[in-house]
Image (cartoon, rainbow, N blue to C red):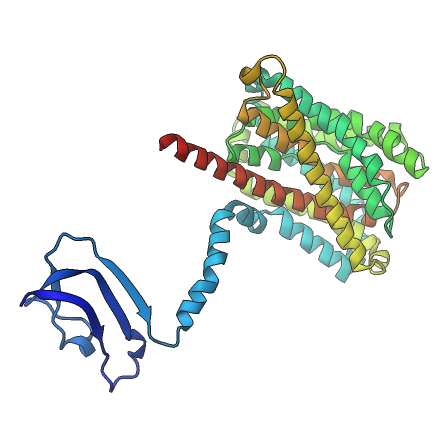
Amino acid sequence: MAGTLQTLICTPNPNSTRNQIFNRNVQFLPPIHLQPSNNSTFPNPNLQHFPKFHLVSNQTVKVRVSDGYNGNQHSRVHWAKPLLKFAETNFLPIVCFLTTNIFPALVCGITLGLANPSLGCLAHRYSMSKFSTFGIFLISGLVLRSEEIGAAAEAWPAGLFGIVSILVLSPIFSKFILQVQLAPQEFVTGLAIFSCMPTTLSSGVALTQLVGGNSALALAMTVISNLLGILFVPFSLSKFIADSVGVSVPTGQLFRSLITTLLVPLILGKVFRDCFNGVAEHVDKNRKLLSKISAIFLSLVPWIQVSRSRSLLLMVKPTAFLVAIWMGMFLHLILLAFNTLAAQSLSVVPGGRKSVFAKKENSRALVIVASQKTLPVMVAVVEQLCGSLGESGLLVLPCVAAHINQIIIDSFLVNFWLGKDQSSNELKEA
């Protein structure tokens, strides 16, 4: 029997309470012609008195289903939609925040130092932090791929400006940071030291690759700035921070210590990778494991420093630490804005659209890499200062938060750029 069906109301068996949730109002719009089927039955025994229908119309069917149980599911779906939309549009920052090895390792190290400082003090007695720093940069040398550095030769003006921005221009901001009055003042001094550091060892290159930037340029700036940073950092600390604080930094001793703890293991790792057969392949296959080991090494230093400074840290007001966190975030946003404005300004120099700075992949690599600061080098520097600029734990703690926050902020920036590229491609296709 054929007919036109506009609304089909399926009423469950009144004797069954288990199937009450199947009470639906199903509407097929517009009307469609249906024919009963004789060779099939409904799988639900409560609905067997309804015939099953075949569609014999080629019309598009729109189905609207409304629930008949107090509207609770509708309210839950309505509440969940904004969260699902946020998770979809910000997938990269959320994943970066949850899966990075650095975040849980640092949090565990700080928590352990506050909970039981005796182990951290014992580790400090045996100079464990020096061995952990050596291990961090040995692993950095092992995983360092330099094959692409030659590909950055085309964009050398952008790379040169990036290195100048990292090692010469950004330390100037430390003068402004030191004008802030906060108790304890070590929080401010630590962030000022952080602004004098070279760029991150891995996250800048990784984010550049995700956004489709010039990863070769990012890698070149990372390697060169960290190597030259051993020369520049002691003089930056002496010029911009020690003079403002009113103390003297042993520049020569710090320089020799950085060579021993940073440059030597970095070169050793690179030599092992390039000169011994099979090492590079084995390292590349186990990059995730080495990343976790490096994160553990990195967490040892704040663990030791927090353990030593536990009594002082417990006296710090939470509001002061929150202010220091906001200061670290603001510093990174300032560096992003400065490097973005500089890249856009340099793109109008002779060359126009053909300028190195006008190319999207170069400018994005420049902005990301030149705006980040590395925590391992900062920790190594504080360790060598031996308290001349303040209590080590108080100097390091706000920089741990700043290091994590800069990765999260740049993840949102990369996500924004990817969405912008997608919209641009859709407009071109249209």
